[in-house]
Length: 235
Image (tube, rainbow, N blue to C red; front, side):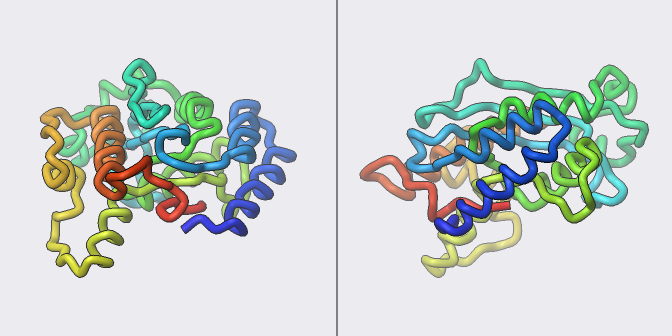
């Protein structure tokens, strides 16, 4: 849960980093982050994000695509959808069988620096929504440290909702068993009676995550708009 102290720390770190930041778009994000005051799901701006990666090791693998969509007033803004291919000098290798992106397709992509600039511009003043935040956030933090030339221990402040962790915590509180695969994005969407998306890329998964977050919120509190603070994590 995001306590008052955690929120104060986030704002303080945002202010400190904004003071030394040399990249305008990141500075703007930090200033917006400093003003974040999350409330209920229908009055808190959010951004649902998904990454495609060449693998799961932040030391060896790279981000090769980023997808996102914005959520305002408890509704997905489809006109805000973005899907970016990221050029890399690393081969996608066997991971192409998962995300179906090939080396020659990534040759048309933009640099990771430009991609991060667009992403953080879109994320200004918003809570991040992920499915399995730990993985995507770890890759974003590594990429941001290189982009902004920050120290290895520096983290870009982020306020996040993780649909996987929210569901896991809910089931644990209710003593509901969790079997392997139960918390995968597709399985959880089926559990919440959401349609199955056949395509698989970063934008499709970002939209799928946004829809799942809204469906979960509606079930967690059927009487009013869900209060987000008990589910927020500070990074």
